[in-house]
Length: 139
Image 1 (cartoon, rainbow, N blue to C red):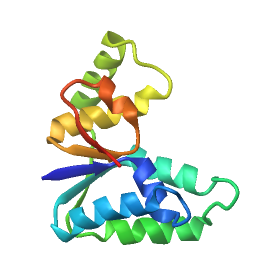
Image 2: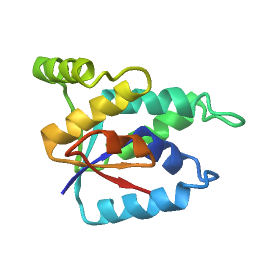
Image 3: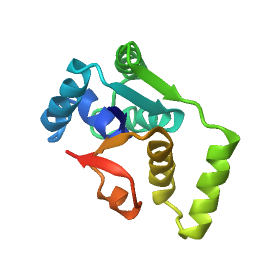
Image 4: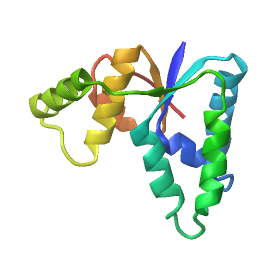
């Protein structure tokens, strides 16, 4: 199987004090142990960097965030999704068609990637229910 880790999962993995850390760790450890494919998008990586280095009360330093990401990017089955022009055209057409804006734009992008790659999203976000045919596991 193929999975996409939402940025909130990366945050929970990086912050052991997060209430959701154990649940995120359990799911991702199973995926890693089975050597499943994991896909990240540039937007997910950048979102992690933005949130993790500004999270109150104790953000990660830029170096800590990079060390975490480097370890994740070293996972042999990790793939970084490279969006095509077709992806952006499909995404923006769907944004208009479904009247998606604001905070749902990032979820729509991840949902589109999941459909293109036949992936299951690992998340703690109920908003993926709004995207038909998208498979996701909520921790």
